[in-house]
Image (tube, rainbow, N blue to C red):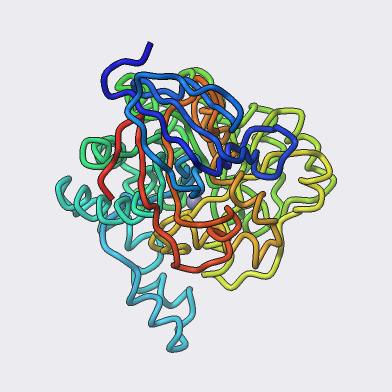
Length: 406
Ligand SMILES: [Zn+2]
Protein backbone atom coordinates (compact mmCIF):
# COMPACT_ATOMS: atom_id res chain seq x y z
CA UNK A 1 0.00 0.00 0.00
CA UNK A 2 1.47 3.31 -1.06
CA UNK A 3 1.99 6.01 1.55
CA UNK A 4 1.36 9.68 0.99
CA UNK A 5 4.00 11.20 -1.29
CA UNK A 6 5.17 7.83 -2.51
CA UNK A 7 5.85 8.17 -6.19
CA UNK A 8 5.85 6.10 -9.32
CA UNK A 9 8.12 7.28 -12.13
CA UNK A 10 6.71 5.66 -15.23
CA UNK A 11 7.57 5.50 -18.91
CA UNK A 12 11.36 5.65 -18.59
CA UNK A 13 14.27 3.94 -20.26
CA UNK A 14 15.94 2.56 -17.18
CA UNK A 15 19.74 2.24 -17.08
CA UNK A 16 19.52 0.22 -13.88
CA UNK A 17 23.18 -0.95 -13.69
CA UNK A 18 21.80 -4.33 -12.65
CA UNK A 19 23.51 -7.39 -14.12
CA UNK A 20 20.49 -8.42 -16.20
CA UNK A 21 22.41 -9.39 -19.33
CA UNK A 22 21.67 -6.06 -21.02
CA UNK A 23 24.19 -3.26 -21.49
CA UNK A 24 23.80 -0.69 -18.69
CA UNK A 25 21.22 -3.05 -17.15
CA UNK A 26 18.70 -1.45 -19.51
CA UNK A 27 14.99 -2.01 -18.95
CA UNK A 28 12.74 -0.45 -21.59
CA UNK A 29 9.37 1.20 -20.86
CA UNK A 30 10.02 0.79 -17.18
CA UNK A 31 8.43 2.22 -14.05
CA UNK A 32 10.08 2.70 -10.66
CA UNK A 33 8.14 2.87 -7.41
CA UNK A 34 9.60 4.84 -4.53
CA UNK A 35 8.43 4.76 -0.93
CA UNK A 36 10.14 7.00 1.57
CA UNK A 37 13.84 7.00 0.72
CA UNK A 38 13.90 3.60 -0.99
CA UNK A 39 13.12 1.99 -4.31
CA UNK A 40 10.32 -0.49 -3.63
CA UNK A 41 9.39 -1.74 -7.09
CA UNK A 42 10.60 -1.94 -10.68
CA UNK A 43 8.14 -2.79 -13.43
CA UNK A 44 8.50 -3.64 -17.11
CA UNK A 45 6.02 -2.70 -19.82
CA UNK A 46 3.85 -5.80 -19.34
CA UNK A 47 3.65 -5.60 -15.56
CA UNK A 48 0.60 -4.32 -13.74
CA UNK A 49 1.48 -1.04 -12.07
CA UNK A 50 0.66 -0.55 -8.40
CA UNK A 51 -1.96 2.00 -7.41
CA UNK A 52 -2.02 4.82 -4.94
CA UNK A 53 1.23 6.50 -6.01
CA UNK A 54 1.78 10.03 -7.26
CA UNK A 55 2.65 9.33 -10.88
CA UNK A 56 5.41 11.15 -12.73
CA UNK A 57 5.57 10.64 -16.50
CA UNK A 58 9.20 10.20 -17.58
CA UNK A 59 8.21 10.72 -21.22
CA UNK A 60 10.55 8.02 -22.44
CA UNK A 61 13.69 9.71 -21.07
CA UNK A 62 16.58 7.84 -19.42
CA UNK A 63 16.60 7.25 -15.68
CA UNK A 64 19.97 6.49 -14.08
CA UNK A 65 21.23 6.09 -10.53
CA UNK A 66 22.61 9.32 -9.02
CA UNK A 67 26.32 9.51 -9.69
CA UNK A 68 28.86 8.81 -6.98
CA UNK A 69 32.15 10.72 -6.95
CA UNK A 70 34.20 8.29 -4.87
CA UNK A 71 37.47 10.28 -4.66
CA UNK A 72 37.69 14.01 -3.97
CA UNK A 73 39.72 16.45 -1.88
CA UNK A 74 37.20 19.25 -2.22
CA UNK A 75 37.66 20.88 1.19
CA UNK A 76 40.71 23.15 1.04
CA UNK A 77 41.84 26.75 1.38
CA UNK A 78 43.34 28.92 -1.35
CA UNK A 79 44.00 27.74 -4.86
CA UNK A 80 47.00 26.99 -7.05
CA UNK A 81 46.09 29.05 -10.10
CA UNK A 82 49.20 31.22 -9.83
CA UNK A 83 51.36 28.13 -9.61
CA UNK A 84 49.71 26.80 -12.76
CA UNK A 85 50.66 30.02 -14.50
CA UNK A 86 54.22 29.98 -13.13
CA UNK A 87 54.77 26.50 -14.49
CA UNK A 88 53.50 27.49 -17.91
CA UNK A 89 55.83 30.47 -17.81
CA UNK A 90 58.70 28.03 -17.43
CA UNK A 91 59.34 27.68 -13.68
CA UNK A 92 60.22 24.22 -12.41
CA UNK A 93 58.23 22.44 -9.72
CA UNK A 94 61.35 22.58 -7.50
CA UNK A 95 61.53 26.38 -7.85
CA UNK A 96 57.85 26.73 -7.06
CA UNK A 97 58.22 24.44 -4.03
CA UNK A 98 61.17 26.54 -2.83
CA UNK A 99 58.92 29.60 -2.89
CA UNK A 100 56.44 27.78 -0.65
CA UNK A 101 54.27 26.46 -3.48
CA UNK A 102 52.90 22.97 -4.12
CA UNK A 103 50.94 21.08 -1.47
CA UNK A 104 52.60 23.17 1.25
CA UNK A 105 50.83 26.28 0.04
CA UNK A 106 47.47 24.47 0.20
CA UNK A 107 48.25 23.23 3.72
CA UNK A 108 49.11 26.80 4.85
CA UNK A 109 45.99 28.24 3.23
CA UNK A 110 43.77 25.50 4.68
CA UNK A 111 45.15 25.96 8.19
CA UNK A 112 44.66 29.73 7.88
CA UNK A 113 41.09 29.52 6.53
CA UNK A 114 38.16 29.86 8.91
CA UNK A 115 35.70 27.00 9.11
CA UNK A 116 33.13 29.21 7.39
CA UNK A 117 35.54 29.98 4.54
CA UNK A 118 36.32 26.30 4.09
CA UNK A 119 32.62 25.48 4.04
CA UNK A 120 31.73 28.17 1.51
CA UNK A 121 34.43 27.20 -0.97
CA UNK A 122 33.75 23.47 -0.56
CA UNK A 123 30.04 24.13 -1.08
CA UNK A 124 30.64 25.89 -4.39
CA UNK A 125 32.63 22.89 -5.65
CA UNK A 126 30.21 20.28 -4.31
CA UNK A 127 27.30 22.22 -5.80
CA UNK A 128 28.82 21.86 -9.27
CA UNK A 129 29.05 18.12 -8.81
CA UNK A 130 25.50 17.93 -7.50
CA UNK A 131 24.26 19.93 -10.50
CA UNK A 132 25.57 17.16 -12.76
CA UNK A 133 23.58 14.50 -10.95
CA UNK A 134 26.03 13.50 -8.22
CA UNK A 135 24.22 12.34 -5.09
CA UNK A 136 27.13 10.88 -3.10
CA UNK A 137 30.57 12.44 -2.66
CA UNK A 138 33.61 11.11 -0.87
CA UNK A 139 35.75 13.85 0.70
CA UNK A 140 39.24 13.38 2.10
CA UNK A 141 41.11 15.38 4.69
CA UNK A 142 44.86 15.78 4.20
CA UNK A 143 45.46 19.51 3.77
CA UNK A 144 45.58 20.25 7.48
CA UNK A 145 47.96 17.53 8.63
CA UNK A 146 47.66 18.86 12.18
CA UNK A 147 45.12 17.72 14.71
CA UNK A 148 42.78 20.73 14.62
CA UNK A 149 42.70 21.30 10.88
CA UNK A 150 42.27 17.64 9.92
CA UNK A 151 39.28 17.44 12.27
CA UNK A 152 37.91 20.73 10.97
CA UNK A 153 38.19 19.54 7.36
CA UNK A 154 36.21 16.39 8.12
CA UNK A 155 33.58 18.36 10.05
CA UNK A 156 33.21 20.79 7.13
CA UNK A 157 32.84 17.87 4.73
CA UNK A 158 30.04 16.38 6.85
CA UNK A 159 28.34 19.79 7.03
CA UNK A 160 27.90 19.80 3.25
CA UNK A 161 25.03 17.37 3.76
CA UNK A 162 23.07 20.10 5.55
CA UNK A 163 23.31 22.41 2.52
CA UNK A 164 23.06 20.09 -0.47
CA UNK A 165 21.15 16.96 -1.42
CA UNK A 166 24.18 14.70 -1.25
CA UNK A 167 25.51 11.98 0.99
CA UNK A 168 29.04 12.68 2.13
CA UNK A 169 31.49 9.90 2.93
CA UNK A 170 34.61 11.11 4.71
CA UNK A 171 38.14 9.74 4.63
CA UNK A 172 41.02 10.60 6.94
CA UNK A 173 44.11 11.20 4.77
CA UNK A 174 46.62 12.23 7.42
CA UNK A 175 49.33 10.34 5.50
CA UNK A 176 49.05 12.71 2.52
CA UNK A 177 52.31 14.63 3.03
CA UNK A 178 54.79 15.32 5.81
CA UNK A 179 53.95 18.71 7.35
CA UNK A 180 56.68 21.28 7.74
CA UNK A 181 56.84 20.85 11.51
CA UNK A 182 57.79 17.19 10.95
CA UNK A 183 60.29 17.87 8.13
CA UNK A 184 62.83 15.02 7.90
CA UNK A 185 60.84 13.15 10.59
CA UNK A 186 58.28 11.20 8.55
CA UNK A 187 58.26 8.26 10.97
CA UNK A 188 57.44 10.57 13.87
CA UNK A 189 54.65 12.09 11.80
CA UNK A 190 53.19 8.65 11.05
CA UNK A 191 53.26 7.89 14.77
CA UNK A 192 51.36 11.14 15.37
CA UNK A 193 48.81 10.18 12.68
CA UNK A 194 48.29 6.72 14.17
CA UNK A 195 48.43 7.46 17.88
CA UNK A 196 47.18 11.03 18.28
CA UNK A 197 44.93 12.10 15.41
CA UNK A 198 43.33 8.88 14.19
CA UNK A 199 42.04 7.73 17.61
CA UNK A 200 40.21 11.05 18.08
CA UNK A 201 38.77 11.02 14.57
CA UNK A 202 37.56 7.48 15.17
CA UNK A 203 36.11 8.41 18.58
CA UNK A 204 34.21 11.34 17.05
CA UNK A 205 32.98 9.17 14.16
CA UNK A 206 34.33 11.71 11.66
CA UNK A 207 35.76 9.30 9.10
CA UNK A 208 34.33 6.34 7.22
CA UNK A 209 37.77 5.23 6.00
CA UNK A 210 41.48 5.95 6.17
CA UNK A 211 43.67 6.73 3.14
CA UNK A 212 47.42 7.01 2.47
CA UNK A 213 49.66 8.39 -0.28
CA UNK A 214 52.06 5.53 -0.95
CA UNK A 215 54.74 6.94 -3.24
CA UNK A 216 58.44 7.79 -3.45
CA UNK A 217 57.46 11.40 -2.69
CA UNK A 218 54.79 10.25 -0.20
CA UNK A 219 55.02 7.44 2.35
CA UNK A 220 56.81 4.10 2.26
CA UNK A 221 55.23 0.64 2.40
CA UNK A 222 56.38 0.34 6.01
CA UNK A 223 54.80 3.65 6.98
CA UNK A 224 51.56 2.81 5.13
CA UNK A 225 51.47 -0.55 6.93
CA UNK A 226 51.50 1.30 10.26
CA UNK A 227 48.59 3.48 9.16
CA UNK A 228 46.60 0.47 7.93
CA UNK A 229 47.21 -1.39 11.20
CA UNK A 230 46.04 1.62 13.17
CA UNK A 231 42.94 1.88 10.98
CA UNK A 232 42.16 -1.79 11.64
CA UNK A 233 42.53 -1.16 15.36
CA UNK A 234 39.85 1.53 15.11
CA UNK A 235 37.55 -0.51 12.88
CA UNK A 236 38.09 1.72 9.84
CA UNK A 237 38.36 0.41 6.27
CA UNK A 238 41.30 1.57 4.18
CA UNK A 239 41.87 3.08 0.74
CA UNK A 240 45.15 4.05 -0.88
CA UNK A 241 46.68 6.41 -3.43
CA UNK A 242 49.11 4.02 -5.07
CA UNK A 243 51.26 3.58 -8.17
CA UNK A 244 50.47 7.09 -9.45
CA UNK A 245 54.05 8.03 -10.30
CA UNK A 246 55.98 4.79 -9.78
CA UNK A 247 55.42 1.13 -8.92
CA UNK A 248 55.90 0.91 -5.13
CA UNK A 249 53.71 -2.22 -4.73
CA UNK A 250 51.33 -0.18 -2.61
CA UNK A 251 48.30 -1.79 -4.25
CA UNK A 252 49.46 -5.24 -3.19
CA UNK A 253 49.90 -4.00 0.36
CA UNK A 254 46.46 -2.37 0.35
CA UNK A 255 44.90 -5.60 -0.95
CA UNK A 256 46.42 -7.47 2.01
CA UNK A 257 44.40 -5.13 4.23
CA UNK A 258 41.23 -5.73 2.16
CA UNK A 259 41.24 -2.13 0.99
CA UNK A 260 37.98 -0.72 -0.32
CA UNK A 261 39.89 0.79 -3.22
CA UNK A 262 43.27 1.49 -4.73
CA UNK A 263 43.32 4.78 -6.59
CA UNK A 264 45.35 6.05 -9.58
CA UNK A 265 47.37 2.80 -10.25
CA UNK A 266 48.84 3.97 -13.57
CA UNK A 267 52.14 2.25 -12.72
CA UNK A 268 50.62 -0.94 -11.27
CA UNK A 269 52.15 -4.03 -12.88
CA UNK A 270 49.65 -6.17 -14.79
CA UNK A 271 50.88 -9.28 -12.94
CA UNK A 272 49.87 -7.72 -9.60
CA UNK A 273 46.24 -7.12 -10.59
CA UNK A 274 44.94 -10.55 -9.52
CA UNK A 275 45.39 -9.63 -5.85
CA UNK A 276 42.70 -6.93 -6.20
CA UNK A 277 40.15 -9.48 -7.33
CA UNK A 278 40.94 -11.70 -4.35
CA UNK A 279 40.51 -8.86 -1.86
CA UNK A 280 37.41 -7.40 -3.54
CA UNK A 281 39.22 -4.08 -3.94
CA UNK A 282 37.96 -1.54 -6.48
CA UNK A 283 40.43 0.08 -8.91
CA UNK A 284 39.63 3.80 -9.04
CA UNK A 285 40.58 5.60 -12.26
CA UNK A 286 41.41 9.30 -11.90
CA UNK A 287 41.86 10.60 -15.44
CA UNK A 288 41.64 14.25 -14.34
CA UNK A 289 45.03 14.05 -12.59
CA UNK A 290 46.50 12.08 -15.50
CA UNK A 291 45.32 14.82 -17.86
CA UNK A 292 46.32 17.78 -15.71
CA UNK A 293 49.82 16.42 -15.01
CA UNK A 294 50.18 15.50 -18.68
CA UNK A 295 51.07 11.91 -17.78
CA UNK A 296 51.53 9.13 -20.32
CA UNK A 297 51.66 5.87 -18.33
CA UNK A 298 48.26 4.17 -18.67
CA UNK A 299 46.71 2.04 -15.89
CA UNK A 300 46.62 -1.72 -16.56
CA UNK A 301 43.08 -1.66 -17.94
CA UNK A 302 43.34 -4.90 -19.93
CA UNK A 303 44.52 -6.84 -16.87
CA UNK A 304 41.78 -5.28 -14.71
CA UNK A 305 39.19 -6.41 -17.26
CA UNK A 306 40.73 -9.85 -17.58
CA UNK A 307 40.57 -10.41 -13.82
CA UNK A 308 37.12 -8.86 -13.45
CA UNK A 309 38.30 -6.16 -11.04
CA UNK A 310 35.59 -3.50 -10.70
CA UNK A 311 36.76 -0.14 -12.04
CA UNK A 312 35.44 3.15 -10.67
CA UNK A 313 35.92 6.65 -12.09
CA UNK A 314 36.20 9.81 -9.99
CA UNK A 315 37.21 13.45 -10.32
CA UNK A 316 40.02 13.52 -7.70
CA UNK A 317 38.89 17.14 -7.33
CA UNK A 318 41.85 18.91 -5.69
CA UNK A 319 43.76 22.17 -6.18
CA UNK A 320 47.12 20.73 -7.18
CA UNK A 321 46.69 17.95 -9.70
CA UNK A 322 43.00 17.78 -10.66
CA UNK A 323 41.00 21.01 -10.36
CA UNK A 324 38.01 19.26 -11.92
CA UNK A 325 34.47 19.77 -10.58
CA UNK A 326 32.79 17.65 -13.24
CA UNK A 327 31.99 13.96 -12.93
CA UNK A 328 30.71 13.84 -16.52
CA UNK A 329 34.01 15.24 -17.82
CA UNK A 330 35.90 12.68 -15.72
CA UNK A 331 33.83 9.94 -17.39
CA UNK A 332 34.57 11.34 -20.84
CA UNK A 333 38.28 11.52 -19.97
CA UNK A 334 38.24 7.91 -18.72
CA UNK A 335 37.03 6.86 -22.16
CA UNK A 336 39.24 9.14 -24.26
CA UNK A 337 42.44 8.82 -22.21
CA UNK A 338 42.14 5.35 -20.61
CA UNK A 339 39.95 3.75 -23.30
CA UNK A 340 37.23 2.65 -20.92
CA UNK A 341 33.97 1.89 -22.68
CA UNK A 342 31.09 4.29 -21.97
CA UNK A 343 29.36 1.52 -20.03
CA UNK A 344 32.49 0.99 -17.91
CA UNK A 345 32.63 4.74 -17.26
CA UNK A 346 28.99 4.85 -16.13
CA UNK A 347 29.32 1.71 -14.01
CA UNK A 348 32.45 3.42 -12.69
CA UNK A 349 30.47 6.33 -11.27
CA UNK A 350 27.53 4.26 -10.06
CA UNK A 351 27.72 0.63 -8.98
CA UNK A 352 31.52 0.36 -8.77
CA UNK A 353 31.93 3.75 -7.11
CA UNK A 354 29.42 2.59 -4.49
CA UNK A 355 31.56 -0.48 -3.84
CA UNK A 356 34.67 1.73 -3.49
CA UNK A 357 32.91 3.45 -0.59
CA UNK A 358 31.50 0.32 1.04
CA UNK A 359 27.99 1.24 -0.17
CA UNK A 360 27.45 -1.64 -2.60
CA UNK A 361 24.33 -2.81 -0.76
CA UNK A 362 22.44 0.48 -0.91
CA UNK A 363 23.69 2.76 -3.70
CA UNK A 364 24.80 2.84 -7.32
CA UNK A 365 22.07 0.66 -8.78
CA UNK A 366 18.35 0.99 -9.48
CA UNK A 367 17.06 -2.07 -7.68
CA UNK A 368 14.48 -2.87 -5.02
CA UNK A 369 15.76 -1.98 -1.56
CA UNK A 370 18.32 0.52 -2.83
CA UNK A 371 18.34 4.23 -1.99
CA UNK A 372 16.12 6.24 -4.34
CA UNK A 373 18.94 8.50 -5.59
CA UNK A 374 17.94 8.93 -9.23
CA UNK A 375 18.39 11.27 -12.16
CA UNK A 376 16.19 11.69 -15.21
CA UNK A 377 18.13 12.82 -18.29
CA UNK A 378 16.92 14.28 -21.57
CA UNK A 379 18.76 11.71 -23.67
CA UNK A 380 17.89 8.68 -25.77
CA UNK A 381 20.76 6.53 -24.56
CA UNK A 382 23.16 6.63 -21.58
CA UNK A 383 26.22 6.79 -23.86
CA UNK A 384 25.28 10.39 -24.68
CA UNK A 385 26.25 11.45 -21.15
CA UNK A 386 29.79 10.19 -21.65
CA UNK A 387 30.13 11.38 -25.23
CA UNK A 388 29.15 15.01 -24.69
CA UNK A 389 31.44 17.45 -22.91
CA UNK A 390 29.51 19.93 -20.76
CA UNK A 391 26.35 19.14 -22.69
CA UNK A 392 24.06 17.61 -20.10
CA UNK A 393 22.39 18.34 -16.80
CA UNK A 394 19.64 16.21 -15.28
CA UNK A 395 16.04 17.18 -15.95
CA UNK A 396 15.02 15.94 -12.53
CA UNK A 397 16.87 14.54 -9.58
CA UNK A 398 15.62 12.57 -6.60
CA UNK A 399 17.71 12.28 -3.49
CA UNK A 400 16.57 9.61 -1.04
CA UNK A 401 13.16 9.65 -2.70
CA UNK A 402 12.69 13.42 -2.54
CA UNK A 403 12.60 15.60 -5.63
CA UNK A 404 15.66 17.80 -5.41
CA UNK A 405 15.98 21.36 -6.68
CA UNK A 406 18.59 21.66 -9.39
ZN1 LIG B 1 43.53 11.99 -4.52
